[in-house]
Length: 165
Image (tube, rainbow, N blue to C red):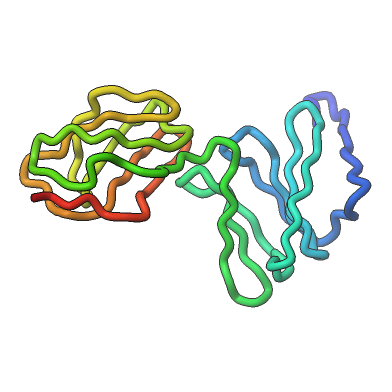
């Protein structure tokens, strides 16, 4: 709606949005769920994307999470997570172990602009970062654990642990 009261409607042929909810996504899109179990997003230019999944159990609420993903609640008492096109993601890191001071290459996507890297919750020094790779130094006094990268859009956590030797 403009300040003068003009409303722009978006009609989505694939679904009838009824009884749903909307939220602003970290990717700049508006995300929605409806009572029929549809999840979708609308770009600021009006492009609509519908996300279908046979595992969805009638989503009832939706919100953008601090990790850069979209989170939903479902009627079967579960919570779901949908990565957005800007959600940071850690694919791997190398080496997988080493002493304090080891230089570690963390690869993934949407890692650029990292504001924090931690090893088992202990802040590490960031040497360099790009969208696909961060180079960080294992902090002094570090312990074995998961690697976490925080960007302005969200947070990614590794699936495996780095071992401090």
